[in-house]
Amino acid sequence: MNRIAIASTLALTALTALSANAGEPMSAYIIEGSGFFGAPGIELTQLGRVDLSNPSSVDILPAAGINLRFGGADQRPGSGELVAFENTTNALRIVDTVSGGNTLIDSIGFMESGVAGMAYSNDGSVAYVTTTVGAFVRILTVDADTGAMIAMNNIITDPISSLAVVPEGHKSLTPGDLYGLALTAGGSVRLVRVDLGSNSIASTQFVTGIGFNAQFETGLDFAPDGTLYALIQGYDEVSPDVFVEISSHLYTINPSNGAATDLGVVQADGTWDAVTLVVDAGADGCPADFTGDGVLDFFDVSAFLNAYNAMDPIADFTGDGVFDFFDVSAFLSAFNTGCP
Image (tube, rainbow, N blue to C red; front, top):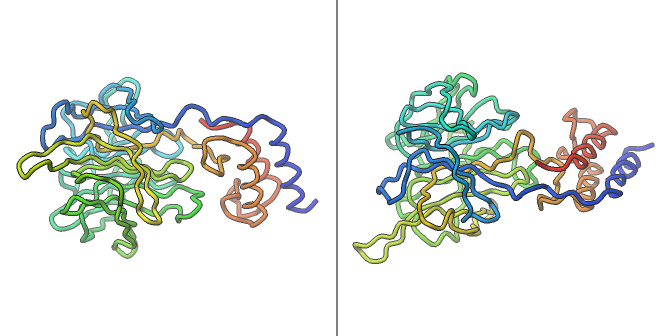
């Protein structure tokens, strides 16, 4: 039986089952910010989970610490652990999302307190951490287990306040590429792709559709289906001497043109100036959701078959570079298991 026949015969077995729902609406972790202007209600290290389908719904979790200033976080691939960069002590800390508090991994050093961001590589072996140091945006590549610095990059660009890594299997971007949100002096936001190899900003897209002046901290993360989510907070200037604080808004951003879609205010009482956004993808995400619509159905099977027959690497479920029975079997297993 040839490759196409194998795929068609086995994948069609998935269609005999009812469509599988991907579970509850996805959520994301957020951590309360540093509150540069001392906005009422700011509680440093407050940890929450925001419903990505309803940003005004935030579950308050036990605080991530006491008198610390976090700036960026991510889930470590393969473990689901929430790890945050705390830039009072310039340290990586595992945040306990159940009982509260944190466990120190180690201090990184070589950074300064202020606006910061953090993201893991797709294999979870290294973390990228950024702050502004003098006239430079400094990005450190550090060992995820020990916090030891592996490489340092200093780039002249607008301050970058959040980082995100393109996940494996992304349908339009290169997996492993590093993106960030950079804030200009005029209060606008740019989505930048960072090339650490050439120590430069490889591409820039101005983010449109925000509607207010962005302020200091942002959050940025890719969902398993490739959707890019952003958390942006700021202020409106009502008059030359009157400013209105804006609680964080949740957006999706189209990386190809920078268009932002406002999904709503994060907890509409205005108390969240969050500095992180970490989509809770679990340890493995949902690899069988090829369409990224949150439902496993005929369209995902069709998309897999097309990718498999075209020998697209996204369909190489075993990662061995060969397209065969085992890839189809792995896809079917993921399909039948459903999503977290």
